[in-house]
Image 1 (tube, rainbow, N blue to C red):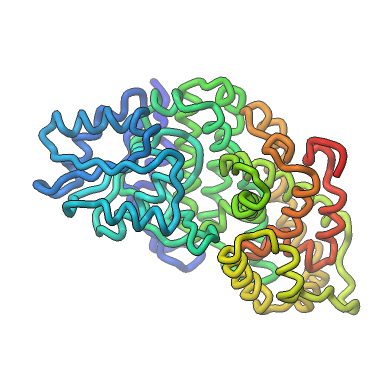
Image 2 (cartoon, one colour; image 1 turned 30 degrees about the vertical axis):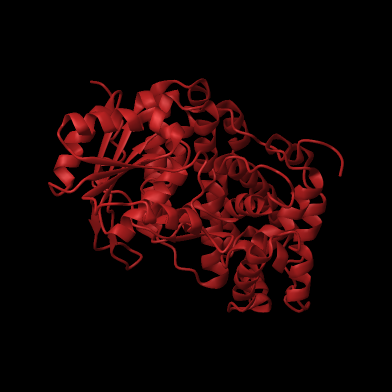
Length: 456
């Protein structure tokens, strides 16, 4: 019997969990997934099922995703007698406050449903626009490039700073194996890189529970781990662009997105490694560097986090009688992040101040870690063990494994490692290293394998 590509997702679509051990009620809003070769051919039937009749279908795409699947989707909808209005972004759009306002202003008639044709940016713009218009969204995925399809958040840049904001996920998703396999190889490599961050992002979540009382949902944690583990064995096939493997990657990415929806936050799938990527994005203008794909940057950030965890593991527990290093004051933060545009810098400072004011404070975090060193590391070791062989899998899938491969010089790589933790009020391994006064030392001696080049 042929293998069902949707088998991992089936138990979760539209599921409500009332009795989770974490004590919270979970609802997965993604209800339908069409998957397989030619799956886009089912778009008209899906829309008829989900949309109220009469009002137009709003089809959102960029020029590339319109060519990949948008034009075909429009033709199928029109042929089925459904009114369609197209909303086209520019090439390489950004999910930011300016773009969202421009799109909202371009909507002529109140739609019955929004069909977003694209991947990361278009999917997130679709979520935010559909929420504003108060209509359901269907996404036609054009690349297995990221894990946000089913998540209940969007990566949104406001006032120059990228952050995650609440955003209802699509109610249905189309994963056409032919469309996904035809996407540029870099996109599937980026998706693989995003997915393989889970060993360290989940470790960061567990770390934050131990040291800053962050609640953890074991159900979401297990989902994130399952999503990453089930696809690693197909790394070489993904690198080669084998359609079945790319579809499996897309399904695993959707499962990862569901883990975030269950958690109600990006925590099971986003930790310090994602902050590395976000910091590279906001620094791009000043450094005259074109940002690479999110998952490409996350892949390198994941290897940074793994290496840092190894360093801290061998450093031994802190001496609670020794005063902790002082937190950076605003003057120091402005020096470190002075290359950022003014609006972005102020938004970053707000996040850094909120993190600085968190309780328990640095002294208490060090005391907790010293008192629970063995227990904490037993938990972290089990989680981090799932990252064994991760660099080799990234290579097999065609993803980058060094800063050089994503056009970051050694000096800037060290700067990123020192500065990325201030991007979010979220506790990660980068903060643990800072609490132990070891972050600057680690940044100064980044492994050559991660830098990709010897020098400054």
